[in-house]
Length: 321
Image (cartoon, rainbow, N blue to C red):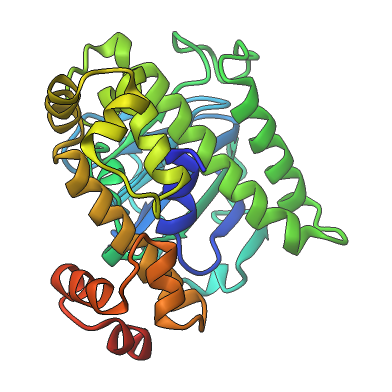
Protein backbone atom coordinates (compact mmCIF):
# COMPACT_ATOMS: atom_id res chain seq x y z
CA UNK A 1 0.00 0.00 0.00
CA UNK A 2 1.12 3.59 -0.51
CA UNK A 3 1.67 5.76 2.54
CA UNK A 4 -1.61 7.70 2.49
CA UNK A 5 -3.78 4.62 1.92
CA UNK A 6 -1.97 2.78 4.70
CA UNK A 7 -2.35 5.67 7.15
CA UNK A 8 -6.11 5.89 6.55
CA UNK A 9 -6.53 2.12 6.93
CA UNK A 10 -4.63 2.01 10.21
CA UNK A 11 -5.69 5.20 11.96
CA UNK A 12 -9.48 4.84 11.78
CA UNK A 13 -11.46 2.76 14.27
CA UNK A 14 -15.14 1.83 14.25
CA UNK A 15 -17.60 3.12 11.67
CA UNK A 16 -17.58 6.73 10.49
CA UNK A 17 -20.75 8.80 10.95
CA UNK A 18 -22.37 11.30 8.62
CA UNK A 19 -25.51 13.38 8.24
CA UNK A 20 -27.30 15.38 5.58
CA UNK A 21 -28.69 18.45 7.35
CA UNK A 22 -30.89 21.33 6.21
CA UNK A 23 -31.15 24.68 8.01
CA UNK A 24 -33.37 27.73 7.37
CA UNK A 25 -31.98 31.15 8.30
CA UNK A 26 -31.46 32.45 10.85
CA UNK A 27 -29.48 29.56 12.34
CA UNK A 28 -26.26 28.90 14.22
CA UNK A 29 -24.99 25.41 15.03
CA UNK A 30 -22.05 24.76 17.34
CA UNK A 31 -20.02 21.56 17.02
CA UNK A 32 -18.27 20.37 20.17
CA UNK A 33 -14.59 19.51 20.38
CA UNK A 34 -14.25 15.73 20.10
CA UNK A 35 -10.74 14.46 20.97
CA UNK A 36 -9.75 11.35 19.05
CA UNK A 37 -11.80 12.22 15.98
CA UNK A 38 -11.66 14.04 12.67
CA UNK A 39 -14.65 15.81 11.13
CA UNK A 40 -15.74 17.45 7.91
CA UNK A 41 -18.37 19.88 6.63
CA UNK A 42 -19.38 20.19 2.97
CA UNK A 43 -21.72 22.94 1.77
CA UNK A 44 -24.19 21.44 -0.72
CA UNK A 45 -26.61 24.35 -1.07
CA UNK A 46 -26.72 27.98 0.00
CA UNK A 47 -23.96 29.58 2.04
CA UNK A 48 -22.84 30.01 5.63
CA UNK A 49 -19.93 31.07 7.82
CA UNK A 50 -17.31 28.99 9.60
CA UNK A 51 -16.65 30.48 13.04
CA UNK A 52 -13.75 29.31 15.21
CA UNK A 53 -12.58 30.73 18.55
CA UNK A 54 -9.07 31.58 17.32
CA UNK A 55 -9.73 32.88 13.81
CA UNK A 56 -11.73 35.36 11.78
CA UNK A 57 -15.07 34.04 10.42
CA UNK A 58 -14.70 32.42 6.99
CA UNK A 59 -17.48 32.56 4.35
CA UNK A 60 -18.36 29.19 2.82
CA UNK A 61 -20.17 28.62 -0.47
CA UNK A 62 -21.52 25.73 -2.49
CA UNK A 63 -18.93 22.98 -2.86
CA UNK A 64 -16.62 24.23 -0.11
CA UNK A 65 -15.12 21.53 2.11
CA UNK A 66 -13.85 22.06 5.66
CA UNK A 67 -11.84 19.27 7.28
CA UNK A 68 -11.00 19.25 11.01
CA UNK A 69 -8.32 16.57 11.49
CA UNK A 70 -8.07 17.01 15.28
CA UNK A 71 -11.78 17.19 16.13
CA UNK A 72 -11.60 20.91 16.91
CA UNK A 73 -14.74 22.67 18.08
CA UNK A 74 -16.28 25.12 15.61
CA UNK A 75 -19.54 26.78 14.60
CA UNK A 76 -21.51 27.12 11.37
CA UNK A 77 -24.04 29.93 11.01
CA UNK A 78 -25.94 31.85 8.38
CA UNK A 79 -24.24 35.01 9.69
CA UNK A 80 -21.48 35.70 12.25
CA UNK A 81 -23.98 37.88 14.14
CA UNK A 82 -26.67 35.21 14.53
CA UNK A 83 -27.04 34.06 18.17
CA UNK A 84 -27.01 30.38 19.09
CA UNK A 85 -30.19 28.59 18.01
CA UNK A 86 -29.32 25.04 19.15
CA UNK A 87 -27.16 23.15 21.63
CA UNK A 88 -23.66 22.14 20.62
CA UNK A 89 -23.70 19.01 18.49
CA UNK A 90 -21.56 16.13 19.76
CA UNK A 91 -21.19 12.36 19.31
CA UNK A 92 -24.13 11.68 21.64
CA UNK A 93 -26.57 14.07 19.94
CA UNK A 94 -29.86 12.09 19.72
CA UNK A 95 -30.61 13.75 16.37
CA UNK A 96 -27.79 11.68 14.91
CA UNK A 97 -28.25 8.42 16.79
CA UNK A 98 -28.01 6.55 13.48
CA UNK A 99 -24.56 6.26 11.89
CA UNK A 100 -25.89 7.79 8.66
CA UNK A 101 -28.62 10.37 9.27
CA UNK A 102 -30.74 12.27 6.77
CA UNK A 103 -32.33 15.28 8.43
CA UNK A 104 -34.68 17.18 6.11
CA UNK A 105 -36.55 18.91 8.95
CA UNK A 106 -36.36 22.68 9.25
CA UNK A 107 -34.49 23.06 12.56
CA UNK A 108 -35.60 26.66 13.14
CA UNK A 109 -38.90 26.96 11.32
CA UNK A 110 -38.34 30.59 10.36
CA UNK A 111 -38.50 29.93 6.64
CA UNK A 112 -35.38 31.90 5.68
CA UNK A 113 -32.88 30.99 2.97
CA UNK A 114 -31.89 27.32 3.04
CA UNK A 115 -28.41 25.94 3.63
CA UNK A 116 -27.78 22.22 3.18
CA UNK A 117 -24.66 20.74 4.77
CA UNK A 118 -23.11 17.29 4.56
CA UNK A 119 -21.28 16.70 7.84
CA UNK A 120 -19.51 13.73 9.32
CA UNK A 121 -16.89 12.39 11.69
CA UNK A 122 -14.25 9.68 11.79
CA UNK A 123 -13.21 8.05 15.05
CA UNK A 124 -9.44 7.76 15.36
CA UNK A 125 -7.29 5.62 17.61
CA UNK A 126 -5.00 8.02 19.57
CA UNK A 127 -2.45 5.23 20.10
CA UNK A 128 -2.05 4.86 16.33
CA UNK A 129 -2.03 8.54 15.32
CA UNK A 130 0.35 8.87 12.42
CA UNK A 131 2.70 11.90 12.41
CA UNK A 132 1.26 12.73 8.99
CA UNK A 133 -2.00 13.66 10.76
CA UNK A 134 -0.31 15.40 13.68
CA UNK A 135 1.33 17.77 11.20
CA UNK A 136 -2.02 18.94 9.82
CA UNK A 137 -3.47 22.31 10.89
CA UNK A 138 -6.62 22.48 13.03
CA UNK A 139 -8.76 23.36 10.02
CA UNK A 140 -8.32 22.70 6.31
CA UNK A 141 -10.52 24.71 3.96
CA UNK A 142 -10.77 23.49 0.37
CA UNK A 143 -12.75 26.13 -1.55
CA UNK A 144 -14.75 24.97 -4.54
CA UNK A 145 -13.41 27.91 -6.54
CA UNK A 146 -10.14 29.86 -6.40
CA UNK A 147 -12.08 33.06 -5.65
CA UNK A 148 -15.31 33.43 -3.66
CA UNK A 149 -18.34 33.06 -5.91
CA UNK A 150 -21.97 33.90 -5.22
CA UNK A 151 -23.71 31.04 -3.46
CA UNK A 152 -26.21 30.72 -6.30
CA UNK A 153 -23.54 30.54 -9.03
CA UNK A 154 -22.03 27.21 -10.11
CA UNK A 155 -18.42 27.01 -8.96
CA UNK A 156 -15.65 25.90 -11.32
CA UNK A 157 -14.92 22.20 -10.94
CA UNK A 158 -11.64 22.63 -9.08
CA UNK A 159 -11.51 19.16 -7.51
CA UNK A 160 -13.60 16.83 -9.71
CA UNK A 161 -12.79 13.62 -7.82
CA UNK A 162 -13.70 15.18 -4.48
CA UNK A 163 -16.85 16.65 -5.98
CA UNK A 164 -17.87 13.23 -7.35
CA UNK A 165 -17.41 11.56 -3.96
CA UNK A 166 -19.43 14.30 -2.25
CA UNK A 167 -22.23 13.93 -4.80
CA UNK A 168 -22.44 10.17 -4.37
CA UNK A 169 -22.36 10.40 -0.58
CA UNK A 170 -25.03 13.12 -0.49
CA UNK A 171 -27.29 11.08 -2.77
CA UNK A 172 -27.00 7.99 -0.55
CA UNK A 173 -27.83 9.99 2.59
CA UNK A 174 -30.68 11.98 1.07
CA UNK A 175 -32.32 8.94 -0.54
CA UNK A 176 -31.24 5.74 1.29
CA UNK A 177 -31.73 2.58 -0.76
CA UNK A 178 -30.69 -1.05 -0.80
CA UNK A 179 -26.95 -1.16 -0.18
CA UNK A 180 -26.66 2.27 1.46
CA UNK A 181 -25.22 0.80 4.67
CA UNK A 182 -22.34 -0.64 2.62
CA UNK A 183 -21.91 2.31 0.25
CA UNK A 184 -21.72 5.11 2.84
CA UNK A 185 -18.68 3.88 4.86
CA UNK A 186 -16.76 3.26 1.63
CA UNK A 187 -17.65 6.71 0.32
CA UNK A 188 -16.65 8.32 3.62
CA UNK A 189 -13.22 6.70 3.43
CA UNK A 190 -12.94 7.85 -0.20
CA UNK A 191 -13.88 11.38 0.80
CA UNK A 192 -11.20 11.40 3.50
CA UNK A 193 -8.62 10.14 1.02
CA UNK A 194 -9.45 12.85 -1.53
CA UNK A 195 -9.38 15.61 1.09
CA UNK A 196 -5.92 14.60 2.30
CA UNK A 197 -4.61 13.96 -1.21
CA UNK A 198 -5.67 17.42 -2.40
CA UNK A 199 -4.27 19.19 0.65
CA UNK A 200 -0.88 17.48 0.44
CA UNK A 201 -0.65 18.01 -3.33
CA UNK A 202 -1.24 21.75 -2.90
CA UNK A 203 1.45 22.28 -0.29
CA UNK A 204 4.51 22.76 -2.57
CA UNK A 205 2.95 25.96 -3.89
CA UNK A 206 2.78 27.22 -0.31
CA UNK A 207 6.52 26.88 0.25
CA UNK A 208 6.60 24.04 2.78
CA UNK A 209 10.17 22.76 3.08
CA UNK A 210 9.89 20.37 6.04
CA UNK A 211 7.31 18.06 7.56
CA UNK A 212 5.07 15.44 5.98
CA UNK A 213 3.65 17.81 3.38
CA UNK A 214 7.18 18.25 2.03
CA UNK A 215 8.03 14.56 2.48
CA UNK A 216 5.07 13.38 0.39
CA UNK A 217 6.05 15.80 -2.38
CA UNK A 218 9.71 14.71 -2.38
CA UNK A 219 10.14 11.77 -4.83
CA UNK A 220 13.20 10.14 -3.16
CA UNK A 221 11.71 10.22 0.36
CA UNK A 222 8.30 9.15 -0.94
CA UNK A 223 9.90 6.18 -2.72
CA UNK A 224 11.50 5.05 0.54
CA UNK A 225 8.26 5.52 2.47
CA UNK A 226 6.32 3.51 -0.11
CA UNK A 227 8.91 0.73 0.16
CA UNK A 228 8.49 0.58 3.95
CA UNK A 229 4.70 0.56 3.72
CA UNK A 230 4.64 -1.90 0.84
CA UNK A 231 6.68 -4.48 2.77
CA UNK A 232 7.38 -3.57 6.42
CA UNK A 233 8.71 -7.08 7.11
CA UNK A 234 11.55 -6.77 4.60
CA UNK A 235 15.08 -6.63 6.09
CA UNK A 236 15.46 -2.94 5.40
CA UNK A 237 18.71 -1.12 6.05
CA UNK A 238 19.50 2.53 5.44
CA UNK A 239 21.51 1.50 2.40
CA UNK A 240 18.61 -0.52 0.92
CA UNK A 241 16.14 2.32 1.50
CA UNK A 242 18.62 4.76 -0.03
CA UNK A 243 18.74 2.52 -3.11
CA UNK A 244 14.93 2.68 -3.32
CA UNK A 245 15.23 6.48 -3.14
CA UNK A 246 17.97 6.59 -5.76
CA UNK A 247 20.42 8.34 -3.44
CA UNK A 248 23.61 7.44 -1.65
CA UNK A 249 23.33 6.41 2.00
CA UNK A 250 24.37 9.58 3.88
CA UNK A 251 22.48 12.18 1.79
CA UNK A 252 19.37 9.99 1.89
CA UNK A 253 19.52 9.59 5.69
CA UNK A 254 19.87 13.36 6.18
CA UNK A 255 17.08 14.13 3.73
CA UNK A 256 14.69 11.58 5.23
CA UNK A 257 15.28 12.73 8.83
CA UNK A 258 14.92 16.41 7.88
CA UNK A 259 11.54 15.88 6.19
CA UNK A 260 9.96 13.02 8.17
CA UNK A 261 11.29 14.10 11.58
CA UNK A 262 13.07 10.87 12.48
CA UNK A 263 15.75 8.61 10.96
CA UNK A 264 14.72 5.99 8.37
CA UNK A 265 15.10 3.00 10.70
CA UNK A 266 13.38 4.88 13.52
CA UNK A 267 10.33 5.40 11.31
CA UNK A 268 10.52 1.78 10.14
CA UNK A 269 10.38 0.52 13.73
CA UNK A 270 7.55 2.89 14.62
CA UNK A 271 5.50 1.76 11.63
CA UNK A 272 6.16 -1.91 12.33
CA UNK A 273 4.92 -1.53 15.90
CA UNK A 274 1.86 0.46 14.77
CA UNK A 275 1.05 -2.27 12.26
CA UNK A 276 1.54 -4.92 14.97
CA UNK A 277 -0.86 -3.09 17.28
CA UNK A 278 -3.52 -3.10 14.55
CA UNK A 279 -3.00 -6.82 13.91
CA UNK A 280 -3.22 -7.61 17.62
CA UNK A 281 -6.53 -5.78 17.84
CA UNK A 282 -8.05 -7.03 14.61
CA UNK A 283 -7.01 -10.70 14.60
CA UNK A 284 -6.33 -13.70 16.79
CA UNK A 285 -3.20 -14.65 14.87
CA UNK A 286 -0.42 -16.15 17.04
CA UNK A 287 2.26 -13.75 18.22
CA UNK A 288 4.92 -15.53 16.16
CA UNK A 289 2.83 -14.91 13.02
CA UNK A 290 2.40 -11.20 13.81
CA UNK A 291 6.12 -10.95 14.61
CA UNK A 292 6.94 -12.38 11.17
CA UNK A 293 4.52 -9.99 9.43
CA UNK A 294 6.36 -6.99 10.85
CA UNK A 295 9.88 -8.24 10.25
CA UNK A 296 10.90 -10.14 13.41
CA UNK A 297 12.18 -13.72 13.15
CA UNK A 298 12.13 -14.04 16.95
CA UNK A 299 8.96 -13.72 18.99
CA UNK A 300 11.10 -12.59 21.92
CA UNK A 301 12.73 -9.78 19.91
CA UNK A 302 9.31 -8.68 18.68
CA UNK A 303 7.85 -8.64 22.22
CA UNK A 304 10.82 -6.63 23.48
CA UNK A 305 10.46 -4.01 20.70
CA UNK A 306 6.69 -3.85 21.16
CA UNK A 307 6.93 -3.33 24.92
CA UNK A 308 9.56 -0.63 24.48
CA UNK A 309 7.20 1.35 22.21
CA UNK A 310 3.76 0.60 23.69
CA UNK A 311 4.72 0.11 27.34
CA UNK A 312 3.13 -3.32 27.60
CA UNK A 313 3.69 -6.85 26.27
CA UNK A 314 1.85 -7.85 23.06
CA UNK A 315 -0.35 -10.41 24.81
CA UNK A 316 -1.41 -7.93 27.50
CA UNK A 317 -2.06 -5.30 24.84
CA UNK A 318 -4.32 -7.69 22.96
CA UNK A 319 -6.32 -8.64 26.07
CA UNK A 320 -6.83 -4.99 27.05
CA UNK A 321 -7.85 -4.05 23.52
